[in-house]
Amino acid sequence: MLGGSYAIEVPDYSTVQEPDPDTEYAEGERKVRESYFFTRNPQLVADAKKAFGYVCQACGFDFEKKYGEVGKNYIECHHKNPLSEQSDLTPSTLDDVCMLCSNCHRMIHRTRPAMSLEQLRHILREMQERIDPWSDV
Picture 1 (cartoon, one colour):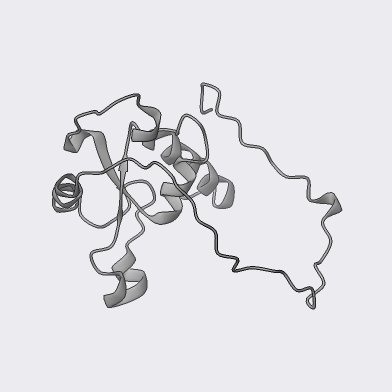
Picture 2 (cartoon, helix red, strand yellow):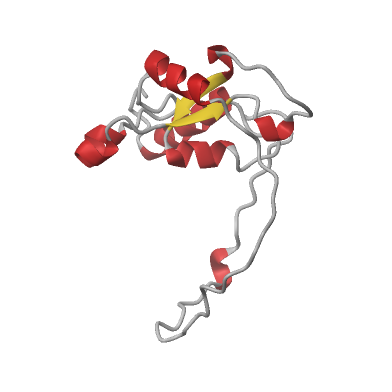
């Protein structure tokens, strides 16, 4: 059980219909957008990659093993306490970040507040047990 108020809505697939393959969709309109973003410290990210490596700390995915040279030295740095959920400038240390593959990084941010690394690991273990109840993930 996740605990807290992490609710993930499951879509109702009972009314899903195949889309018409000949349907055309208008895309590519250029728009101007002004937005705020949170600056990250590139030295923190570089130091975290040196300290933790390039393997996802949630699922174990290794970009280099999967994609070869193009995946070498690729991983995403996740703030365990996301900057977007903090009110002001906050100092960070290596203890405040972890390395995640793109999919795990997206899944952690599917909830608001973002779920913890431990909660995502729990979900991954739970799902693996459903697929293979005899695995020892």
